[in-house]
Amino acid sequence: MHLQKGFRLRSTVNAIVTLTVLATMAISSFIAYSSEKQSLTHTTFQLNQVYADKISDTVNAVFANMKHGLAITGEYLAKDLSRPDLQDYLELFQKSNSSFNSVFIIGKDGKLVESSNPAVKRGSLIASDGTKQALEQKRSLISEPYISAATNKLIVMISEPLYDSEGRYSGFIGGSIWLHETNIFQTILGSAPNESDGSYAYVVSSKGILLYHPDSSRIGEKVEGNPVIDHVAAGLNGMERVVNSQGVDMLASYAYIREAGWGIVAQTPTEVVLTVASKLVLRIMLYMFPALLIFLIAIYWIIRKLSDPLVKLASFASMLSPNNSGRDELPKIHSLNYEANELHKAFGRAVRHFRYQFDNLSQEAQTDPLTGLNNRRTMDKYIKDWISMSRPFSLIILDLDHFKLVNDTFGHDVGDEVLKFLANNLRRLFNEDYKCCRMGGEEFVILVPNESIEVALHEAERIRKYMAETDSPTGGKVTLSIGVAHYPGFASNAEQLFRIADEALYRAKHQGRNRVEAAQALSPQEMTI
Image 1 (cartoon, rainbow, N blue to C red):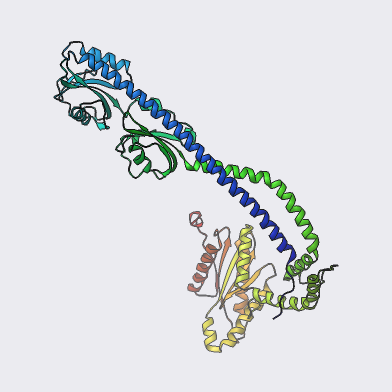
Image 2 (cartoon, rainbow, N blue to C red):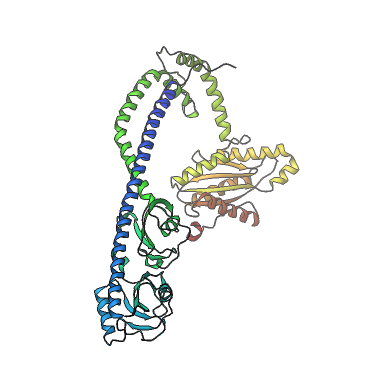
């Protein structure tokens, strides 16, 4: 075994240079992407944290004021809970504290003393979760969210205990916030930063219940499996990348609301940061591209000059095909390149032998070895090309009648002579524009380029009549059954065309053989299937 001398210089050097440039761009882009992603992630966390802390401080201050207002009003009203203007005071207090949806006083027995809402009956027993919690704990309280039995709404209650003039506990004054209607959270969080990029904030209770969310349908939903909510419910502040309960990758910052024991979470989709980082990498590549392009052009020019002799020989080798079989003169080269000179000598010795072998193989690949007609592969190529060019043509399928009987009676050698006899007649009767092919066995196909099937039917009848009137190698006549179809009038693709032509052929067989049958055109609906 002889080792090949030398390498393909142009391809090798071009590949090395190209890979070097691509590696440089890839490494630079990766470093820039990683750095920008880290910077943007940190910035996003910081902005969300600042926002969450600000909202937490604001809500804490608002809750403290609400508690203070309730405490002062309750201290004043607790002196005489039977006064006739008690409801007027509660209505006035609610109007001056618009964060409350209603204000009320509950006695220590759990019954309603008075309410700013006149529709609620005085003396009725209020058995809500918020009322039970306030009566049990007897302290300043912001309740866990609960469903009101009277309004069937999700409510949070803020309450302050009441004591009579002798210091005895007499119930509490409370204000309710209806979470599904306009409330403090919607006022404060109505526009989270950068909403256009998918950022938003939400409020969650210590038990993981959503108290505010931009999607109002989720208010009251209990969220599980989100570590950020677990952390903020535990009284922690911080930031974390997390996949939320909806399966979205988020950069979340959170802050604890001390007055209520709740948490505020501000978050931005991680995809936003990755998109910005990707755009930066694209800009870097665009800036680098002109300089790298000039560098590559210069290198490729030098390589071309050095490898031109080898390229000429390689180009000549690529043209060794049937389409160039008449050209056998080697290109002239003037080179000190050892590989080029050796290849030039080798080509000179081998080219003529190669062309002779190549031409023989090409002929064998395209024709049927017995009849010399085009084979199935060549026929399929003609059909594919004509259909792609929307060129109208007819398909004639011929089948020798009782050919098995010929083989059984006269032997396969005579059968082969009959096939060659038919092939020779096809070549003699039809010009070279008609593509005569052998599909296999005793089936033959003629492709007739024309605008009308009538031409093909005429030609099919001509070959049928000739075979029926001419003695074959058996000493007698052999006949043909023929089916004819047309593209595009009868079918929209090759498969449909062959199917309807075959159906016409078998119809000719069933109707007595030695006849020509035209195919039945498919309907427009069938053509689209």
